[in-house]
Image 1: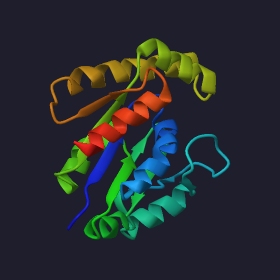
Image 2: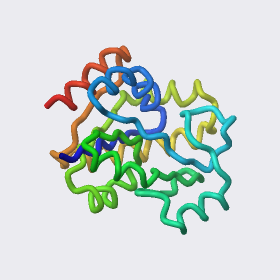
Image 3: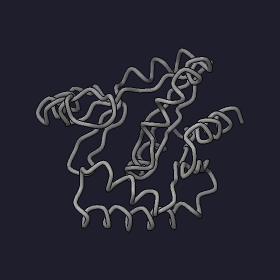
Length: 182
């Protein structure tokens, strides 16, 4: 029996990390592992609990084939450890905090991936991005415009399972679990 890759995507600030943290124990009960990404961001940086490496370390890991998936976005490099293939082969579901820009490459490697799109109302997204203080106002506006373009393109993709995270987090956790149980 093989597990399935669950590829969670959504704009920065949509609450992917918060959703995964809130759903962690319930996902574990469903034999679903959440992957810890490798990111070229220091371990002390605010954000997800990722494995922080230098740009050179990342390049070395990538050259040595240590990633099942890897991409560059927003000035950072992201990698998904190759061990997910072992977990999938062992029958475990594997949930990846992925990238909208890397979706087509992910679908090539994992054609049966369940793709979950986490959305959030633009006003809520703007508020969240401003509150975390990582980007300038201009950067936030660029992110919002990029999100609007992706949302328009995604509207034609019936294979995406959409989860609206504009409301209470527990409601989003229940929507996530419902997508997995379908």
